[in-house]
Length: 185
Image (cartoon, rainbow, N blue to C red; front, side, top):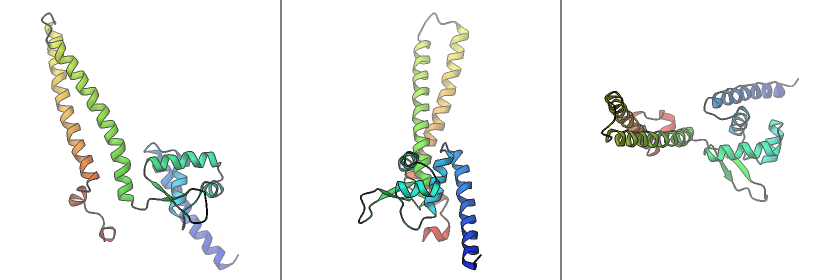
C-alpha cells in the first residue's frame, strides 16, 4: 500500500466517523439516519453534488436522494446551486452552522409555540365561558379558575419563548452568547 493510499484511508476514516456521528445526532431532531448521512457526506465535498453523485456516494437510489435533499432544503441545511454547463441541479451544504441551528430550531420552536398557544387560548376561552354559567357546580368553578391561572402562567412561558426565538432570528442572541472568536471574524 502506498503512503498516499494509507493517508487517504486515514482521512476517509476520520470523515466517516464524523458523518456517522452527525447522522446519529440528527435523529434526535427528527431527521432520519439516511438524511443525516447525506448531510454529513455533503459537508466533506469540495464541490456541489447532483442527485446521481449523491446516490453513487451513498449507494442509495436517486429517489431517496431527492427526498433527502428536499428535507434538507426545507430545513435550510443545503442550498441549490447553479453549475455552468449542466442541466442537473447541484446542492451544497450550508456551512454557517450558527444560521443552520437558528433556522432549524426557529422553524420547529415557532411551529410548536404557535400550536401550544392556540390550544391554551382556546381552552382558556372555553373555561372563561363556562365560568359565566350560573348553575356551574362550585367544585367545577374552582377547577376551571385554577386551570385558567395555569394557562395564564403557561402563556407567559410561550411569550418568553417567542422572544427567545426572535433573539435567534435577529442574531441578538450573539450579544449575550457570542460566536467563537474565529467564527466572528
